[in-house]
Image (cartoon, rainbow, N blue to C red; front, top):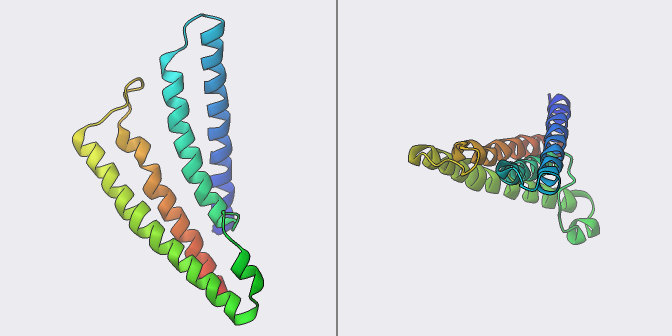
Amino acid sequence: MRLSLDRYLGYFLAGLMALITVDVLWGVFTRYALGNQAGWTEELARFLLIWIGLLGTAWASGQRMHLSITLLPDKLEGKARRRLLLFIDSLVVLFALSVMIIGGGHLVWLTYELGQTSAALKLPMGLIYSVIPISGVLIVFYKLNDLNTQL
């Protein structure tokens, strides 16, 4: 299941990257060739960047490519190294669960309740912010999988 999730998430991220490329190119074209930039292109690029950044973080976490300080784990071996990695993965799960899933879910709910929409695209901001708990769920899934393989 993890391999197919990795593949589909990677394809989805590649699609978002292609979409943001086309969006930015369209914005540049309309600005310089037509003399007036399409107003929605900047907002769409901003939203796509949020999605790419958060989902990319989840994907990188699943590949164990996330930014980390490796000074201490590189100096440890055996059980001490394994315990430290278990502790780090447990902290990541705790953070993703409390901040991204619970806090992000509350943010999504609140923005839907308040009826906030984006200025140019008129999209519900809850839809834009929904990537926070989605990424949190993905990170928790990946880290629990890593914890399971380390035990």
